[in-house]
Length: 262
Image 1: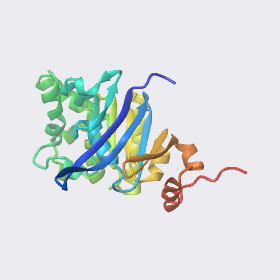
Image 2: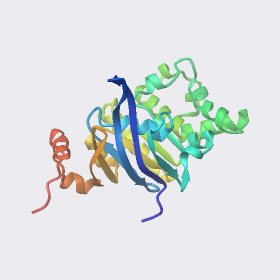
Image 3: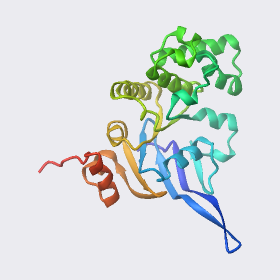
């Protein structure tokens, strides 16, 4: 296998939970976790609410600080990296595009913002980049003049994907980004993401409770329970023959255990 793009080593997260007998106590959101992500690979994290998926996503995206451990991107420590560079290399698509897109800004302004703060492009260059990325996600140049409320929910999700692409990242983290879409729109966005992955060589980290989506999109899967890894492996192998009872229950609840040939 090729050299890992991302290496995560013993990453953990604890949150202060007050005091007990005059001693500070903590809640553990994420037990020490280690994994690797390879170029053009999709790695999925699954688990119920409170499993630690969103905490992990925030740490990887730089929105939350880890309690311990290290993250290396192309062999370079992420915490030592220039903030702008880190922001450009790892981008995040959020669950609800309606709340993550500023309603007072036009689509073009929303997409231009990361370029203003993280590149040296002038106004004309930024406009060209915005138009190019809009085309990549299947939108028109004219959409740059619209406000978010003027376009459909599916189009807003495409804008959210476009915003994640603006700084030419290597990794995109999707935290339940497609869960609010109906089946038709979700299929369109999945196909778009898979197409962009092939064209741009992107790696994805997929945080999802939708195991059908995970089966369709991911190469490998890691199962989290209360912040701890209980199972991991190639997606098809884990789905066909889950080793942990928690994984089996998750699959049975969505009736996704793959019947093995006799």
